Length: 300
Image 1 (cartoon, rainbow, N blue to C red):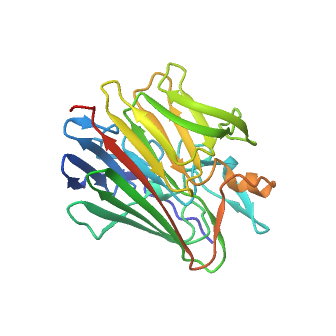
Image 2: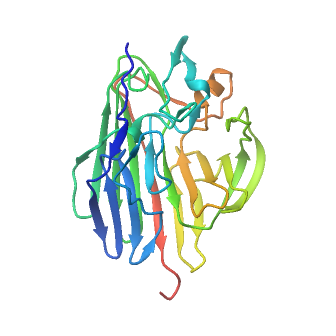
Image 3: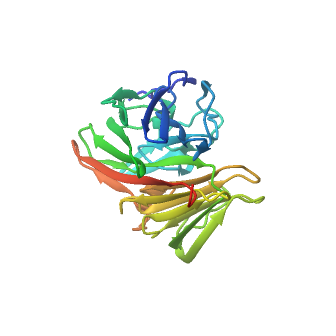
C-alpha cells in the first residue's frame, strides 16, 4: 500500500467561532482541526493562534490540536501489531512519527450551531503510512460551565486497529495542581521504557521546562493563573494518561489528557499492560469526553 503524504503547508485562514455568554471559542478546520482561541472576555485561556498557515512539521506553539490515531511519539516510527510490522512516515523536521496525522490535515465542519461545532476527519488508509482508514470527530460544546470536547474515533477498515487519542492545548496558565500516582520517566529520545509509583501534585512553567508523562491521575486537574482565573479539567476515565509539557522559559503550559502513553504500541508489544493502548474491531467506535471548566477570579 503506497504512503499518502500530508499537505506541506496547512491553510488556517478560515476561522469559525462558537460562543456562550462571555465564553468564545475559535477554530481553524483547515489548520489541522485546531482550536485557535478560547477566551472569556479579555482573558485568553490558551495561547491564541494567529498564524494563517504553517509548514506541517513546524506547527505554532499555540491553540490546541487533536491527537489521532495515537498520542505522542512512536519510537523510530516503527511498531508491530498482531504479528505485522508497520513503518510510519514522519513529517519534515521530525525524526519520529508523532501525534498521528490528524493535526496535519484539513477537517470538515459538521452540525455547527451558535454554541457547538463538530469537526470531522475521514482519513483513508496509508496517510503517513498508517494502514487503517478511520473517522475521527471532535464534538465541541460551549456553555456556562465552559468548553467540553467529546472525541470519537471509528475503525473503517476490515481488520482490528490499535489506537489512542487526546488533545494538546497550550494553556496560558502558570501552574497545574493534580494528584497523579504514576510517572513514566523518559530517555534521551523523550520516550518512556516503563513506569513507577509517584505522587505528583504540581507542575509549572519554569526555566528548565518539563515533559512529563503521568497516569492514574483520576481525570481531575486545576490550572491556575496569577490573577485568580482557574480552569478545572475533568476527563473521562478513558483519558487515563496525562502529559504536562512546557519549554524552558516558555509562556505556555500544555496539560494534555490522552488515552495512551508515548510509544504505547511498542511498550504493549513488550508486555506492558499499563500503556493505555486500545484496539478497535472493524466498524467499532470509541469516544471519551473532557471538560474545561472556566472559572473567573472570585468576585469578578
